[in-house]
Length: 97
Length: 148
Image (cartoon, rainbow over all chains, first blue to last red; front, side):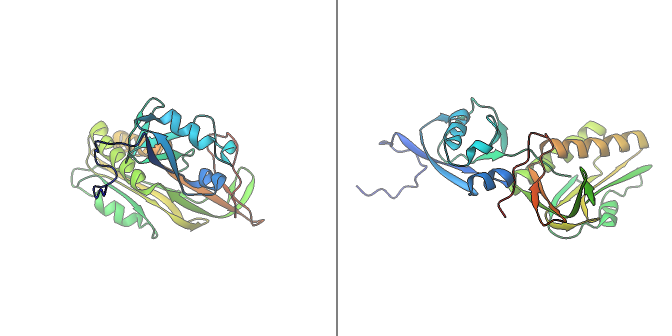
């Protein structure tokens, strides 16, 4: 059936998967050859699972095992739940100043 | 004033920051400037390009100046960080703090730059005289060569 609701709205018939967009910057973007990745993940996954999915990509062997991650603009720990629509970013070692 | 935190893509004007923290209550005003250094770890640098996760960097900078204001007891805190291509001697970051007394002003200025370096998602890629470019990794866990 047609469903005109936005993809991130609550639906009664949910796919078991969601798309998580992961932002990449600086050396991490160079390593993976992209500024962002769209990953198919189970719903309500964790930061640790998202990092594992990124690390399965070609070029990710140049990333550390446990890179810093931000979810919705806040630094997040590995057990943080990631939901559809969350903004996930891998943060290379920062070098401001 | 309300504490000020900006990411900018134009040259930083230190006098503008000093004007923003000016107050009759301030017996001490500290201006810190960070600039592009010609030699880093023994390599000759011709310039740096700064990139950021801009939305988060702006949010972290804002949090830092707000926290600085409450920790050190002054609202007269202003910080600007420049993004984009900078040449040697260009100012990459400026911090101005006004306070009644110098001890707190020095402390606040130092605290802001250390917090900025610790948690604001900004990255710099150094350009060297031999034409190569590398992302700087202050943690020293290896450098990832740039693709271009």
